[in-house]
Amino acid sequence: MEEGEKCGLIGKNGAGKTSLLRIIAGTVPPDEGEVVFNSKIRLEFLEQLPDYTSSSSIIDTVLSGKSELLDKLELHRMLCVELQHNSSNEIKTQIEKISSEIEIQNGWQLENEAKKILSKLGVNNYFDKMGTLSGGLRKRVALARALLAEPDFLILDEPTNHLDADSVQWLQDRLSSSNSTILFVTHDRYFLDALSTRIIELDSKKIYSYSGNYEKYLLQKENFLQTQESTQKHLRNKLRTELVWLSKGAKARRSKQKSRIDWITDLQEDAQSTDEKKIKIELGNVFLGSRLIDAHGISKSLGGKLLFKDFTYLAKPGDRIGIIGLNGSGKSSLLNVLSGELPNDSGTIKIGQTVKIGFFRQESTDLNLNISLVAALREVADYIDVGVGRDRYLTAKDLLNKFLFSPSQHSSFVSTLSGGERRRLAILRVLMGNPNVLLLDEPTNDFDIPTLTAFEEYLDNFMGVLIIVSHDRAFLDRTVNFIWAFEEGGRIREYPGNYTDYLEKKEARQRLLFQASDKSKKTDYIRNDQQQDNRKKLSYKLQREFEELELSIPTLEEKKIEIESKIYSGSIIDYKEIEELSHELERISKEIEQKTERWFELSMI
Image (tube, rainbow, N blue to C red; front, side, top):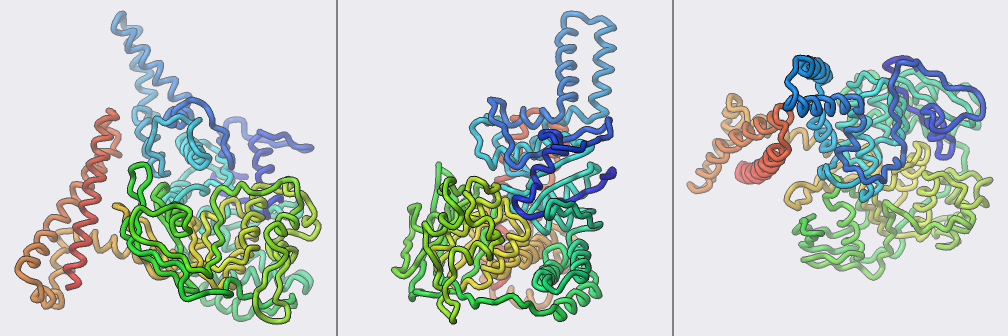
């Protein structure tokens, strides 16, 4: 690897990606060969499951990423204490020298920067002890430490796991602008496409290098496979399909040249048909009655925190819903309430008699490690009745093959599988129950890209109700046609379309708010002829309210910007003052949202 490269490492689960990262990082020795580094570089390695179980606080753990700078800050403190008893010129000279070194390294703002990174990653309780944290929180703290360290060489194993979509986007932007050389493994295809300058594929114990991002890898891989035997036709068609789909994604929709999009579209149309035997599958289509899940005005709080309120959902066959929101906002709790496993605080939920719920949870722990893969599925059922055609039965072995477990693995013990393979098997156990309502809580964590593709193809055939909690933007784009977004105040806002459609609507709304806060443009976009006509329909009281909102929203926006500038400027060192400003910022943000909602309601009239 050269300085400044950002290399994405891809390969199937169990191929050895994590082992390769550990060998390069020096935590595992190679059987043969050697790893050679430039002796001057600083390296940070983010493990897939970081082992942070100490009694240290979150903030201290993150700050340890800058241990040399911390030592200088401690030395400065000790010298200042000594100066109170010994005001010699020597002590003053030492303080001036160490102060200058700290200033050059921006050390006075170190703790503020650490807290800013943690907040962007969804961690706000800075003084909790590491030993009390969940695995997901430990991963986010370890990621914050690696980012604060600003190493020359950064190795990341699944950095997007346990992050919400906004945090993933922030991490993507930060790493893209970083000067660090980065080697990373991820299943997030948008993240991979946006960050990588080279793709390294680990396949059949060999390394293949492709220059460019993920899209260019797909193109080069397609060209490579064109030279292979005709038995590769099926794989080529899969690559082409994914390439076309990728070109329509969140980033691509804004930046692709039209000629490139047209070329990829032609490529899809020219894709050759496969000789592989096709089984017509219609999953989740049996025993769907008139009532599936009827939830009216449901609310839920946990630990004194309101998660959601007054939410209504009437499920119908073919629903494909993605749930997004900040970590801890209540997404998993909503699934638990809809499934009947967690009681709702208010409202009513009725589940139809014909409903068969398949629920995949984030932490799946029901696998028996001492039985074979086939036996693990047959504990649930011997086959799935897909309900159509001569080949209507999908056996346990068929399902294992479809999800890329080779026949040689079928008789292997579950204990021999990698972490990603075990999650894949756990999902197959849920699918083997042939549910007609499928609830998936972060199903794609630790999945490789081939498995994601196979899973997406499987869900294409699912005819029942599909509700997914996921931070994987590409997966949501591929599988859902409706978004539930958790927002402040326990509100769940509904958006038709996939994740990219949601993103566009959200950005359009933010642009509208920005225009509303810009006094010089306010008159142009509000007081056009059509809205003047609409205003005549408002009563005097509502007209006054509307005009007051027009004046107050920009004022609040300016105040919000002012507080944010203070918090992130680094000029405030006192933690209590920062905490007070953070509470004030939260209050103003809620007030802006409430008033903006009311402004929209009145403007529609």
